[in-house]
Length: 173
Image (cartoon, rainbow, N blue to C red; front, side, top):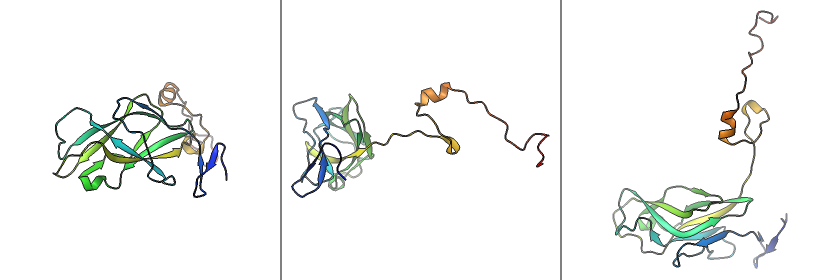
């Protein structure tokens, strides 16, 4: 099935011509990229340590900067997974992460689990996969519900009705 704004890759696979908007915060930042056009995910490169420390702490989460603000298309979000080679460097991604539209820099929390060399930066640490976002309402007990934020739900008082069959006049009991 073809979607609007689709194009065919050289291998015959369709792809949407949506744009993942990125803004570089520093000149060393590297845009997302794919090794092959048919890869499902985009490589994410970390370029700096967030707190300018000299070395990474073993047994702790170390924050790394991508130098990018990322905004997926309105109909989508990005799921960030560890790059397949990350564990070989002695690190794990604390996640997966969900990235939706934001004005904040994408940073990656990496847990250093074994003693060894720190990451040589820049380093391809993660893969981002673009996914369609499905918006739906949540209802209790199979009832229809309006899509509301948590704050909107907490402002509404729902009266509690007594359950049928618990009163004096019910002929069943």
